[in-house]
Image (cartoon, rainbow, N blue to C red; front, side):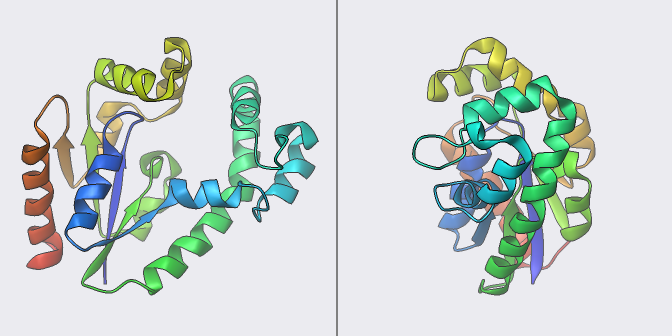
Length: 200
């Protein structure tokens, strides 16, 4: 089974590309969705997170307080590494479980920080990057989340820059103001090349 890594900066439209691959019947393993499940109320990652960062990182429902965790990580760069050390092994286990259950010629792993993590590049056969200008990223994230611009810019600054992502890519999907049908056609072309007719 061929393994495709899908990544892109916040607000690049990566979720839309995931949706388009699902339309083609491909199993998409969404690492963000897995992380959310692990940190929802009752999630298996919560005891270790509370022990490492204190009970104030959990909200009134017993789930991870994402805003509080974001504050901690932005204030202390080492905190990000400690959080990742808790989450990444659990995410990896669930990714492999879902991939093993997938049918068809391949599986797409939706990994926002694929380039930053380093290890993911070794776990996939090809990498596709969804790319958009920083101005477009900023506009999209503010529109969907209501975050202040400085918060979005801080998140963008913590991610790999566009040049680094493109350098790690086997293919780049430019998603900056193009019609959905054009993006759909680009995804279909990659699907045929990598999963339909063989990995080239």
